Image 1 (cartoon, rainbow, N blue to C red):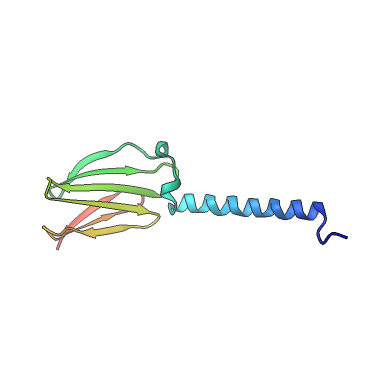
Image 2: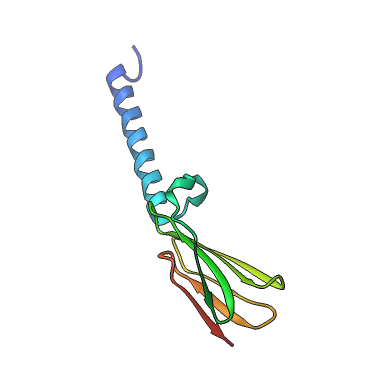
Length: 111
């Protein structure tokens, strides 16, 4: 006599697949899996200036994730990745603190 019937085994596998699918969807929504998101889900790069630095920012349309590339000429470059939470970094040369939120808002504050 088998320990589990075929119906029980199929139901258990179906439940496991649904739980895995739900967990993966939650991770995508929270922006914790940006490496798994297709390139087409990212918006176009927006360019601008903030505190004398040139900036390039893009936001993901599927999840709460944003990326920023910040440059001071060729002297210094910063990359910020806000995947589900706010990212911060301080420049070496000018002591400027940059903050990027997952919705793509970039701020700068000189210290």
